[in-house]
Length: 133
Image 1 (cartoon, rainbow, N blue to C red):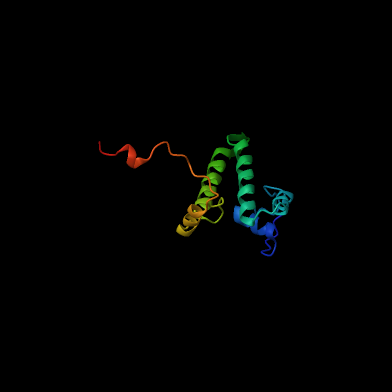
Image 2: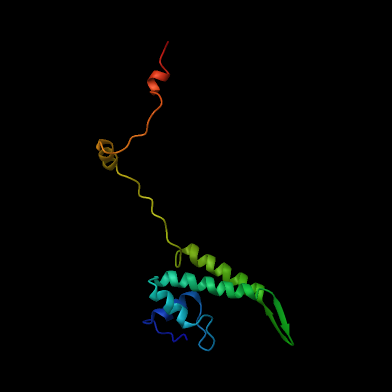
């Protein structure tokens, strides 16, 4: 249950993804605690729980009518998905970003100087192949 306590990590995650209804939470607090116990960061937990909420909305992604009450499930799903895309793209909550650092020139020189490294076999020498006749 959401208690609006910024010192509680579950409440911070609930606030981040919009699961703030005091009476009927979208996801049980046990799921939040499970992901936190697995070592997920708060942002990673928020993304996982938001995916669960999106899956719940997808199951009811159709229009329902009961007497005078109409529920537009498709619009709720689409709105939450659009919001989730905006949140992920803005970097508030997002997937892990890959890091491509490359090798330094000194690492390559050290690798070439190491006699224990296996060198690829060349079937011909470039200069010999294109020599003048």
